[in-house]
Length: 334
Ligand SMILES: Cc1ncc(C[n+]2csc(CCOP(=O)(O)OP(=O)(O)O)c2C)c(N)n1
Image (cartoon, rainbow, N blue to C red):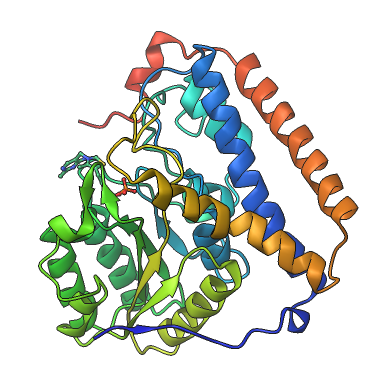
């Protein structure tokens, strides 16, 4: 049975700039998201968007200070959080949603964006949920064959984890001891289906990994420092050649499955409790202040800087033109 990952963490053991980097990354992710929703409400972005508000700690903690550009990630449909933490410029992500040539897809975006940024190790996502689980063992296998120390991290939801693809992936990763880290973002719901309706498990999704001999645990995904520590250990294990790790990170989405979803299948009190007591950004800010790492004014100034960065990114993405018709033939090989 998967154990809960715990660790005594003294924030003062971290350099201040590292702690502020976690904070800034989470704040940037949330503000990116809130501003994208405004753009949708203003009719500037069409298509679907799956908000990641409420789960910023999971992405910031797992990626910042743990992964380099050469380490790979596969995100899922709620994965702007991960792209931002991996350093994809905000103007490029906005450009993809706006469909302008500023986007990573140079104008092929709009709606649910399937973008990649190989220079930053962002290898993309997959349209059918869970398909990235198959792709991730491919890149991890390549790193092993090439004898590099690159690590692959694959993000997927509890719903994706109910698909058969997980088992093929875990089998291959366990058999060949591949440098892959599975991060299951368990926000309890796959659209409106609760995890108890989609998994034949006794308790935890991470228990699936046991059968494949893969070390696993359950962790509070809204605690940015715990997320950082658990993934750091997994990265070290992968680099030592000891193979994969499965991390089930518990979180909850603050908004519906997609913008426009009434989100009426979740108990309002449960949702409010997550917002009030388990918000990753509010809790981390409180910790930074109570431990006298940063004063409120310093955090407010950081927020103003992020607001400015977001405004500039949106302006840049909006100012870029839509692609010419010939764009559809670029990168077309068959
Ligand atoms: C194979 C497949 N089935 C159904 C869908 C439609 N779909 C898109 S997201 C989603 C729910 C995914 O839930 P989960 O993996 O828990 O991620 P979350 O949305 O909670 O972050 C579904 C069913 C799909 N994209 N692919």
